Length: 379
Image (cartoon, rainbow, N blue to C red; front, side, top):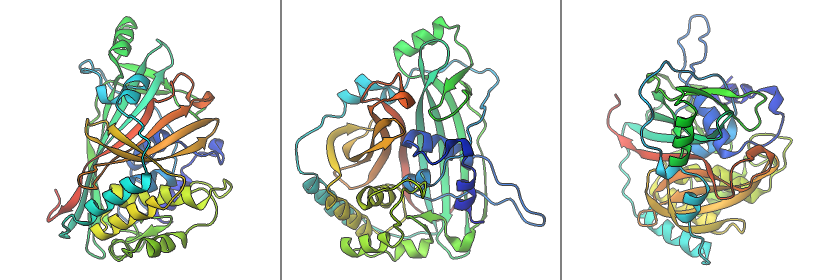
């Protein structure tokens, strides 16, 4: 069984075929990736897939939620101002009436002009933040995880990296005040959409862990609607029409997560191709082609003046999706000056029961790309 099949198999039966929102995907993939698979007799433990696109990987798997605990530690530091819900999120994301095509074509020009010096390793560093409502106390916390990934450019090479849970802390000053009124607990139960039980989070960071192991499944460690190799990524067509045709060879008319959930080709292309912009080791010309391909999709819109969770300014190309009984907006944030992908985030449009308590405009999950580039050596 290849790594992505194993991750898909980890999806608990009680979730059925319902789509999973971006925040839940990010959280659950992080957990899945943070626990090495059991080694077969006579074989080494294989490190879970690194280097998959953030968008593609999270769309491919949802693993079981578990109890995450800690043992004391210092109180959380000042709340993440960039991870605040509703009011702050909407204040920093001003929707502007302009052509999505024009913005994306301009980004394509910038992306295509970037240098490309392939190295021995493709390196990514990401930070994930997920909002949770605490079961008791009436406040919201931000759960944070950081990961580093390294994938060899050589055929038959290695992949690996490190992962660390940084703990959870109140999302806003108001949430911090409510947390202190509740006795400043070091651990608390939080509600998770789609889960039958609450999970336990801690304010204390966990120790980082990691390692390296040989590439598996014929080096197919990246996801573009199907598993592909580094060599295939580097050989992708730079013409947007040919790139679209190449991607659509994997399109079967259904959601990337479930064969029983229909999905039109445009949103499917958006979901699959965002990794080409965000964090995959493609050529600048292919990244530009991805922008041009998205510019031709009628379902996408552009939002300017968006600030990501790291405080970086950019624009976002976005689509809306129905997730259980909620309507969510998935955003790909990019730097308009360079065409570089910055973050992927999930925003509440219509909360429904699955996101009850979150106002429209709340960013409930975000994955920011801190670094994505070539390196000559690994740690």
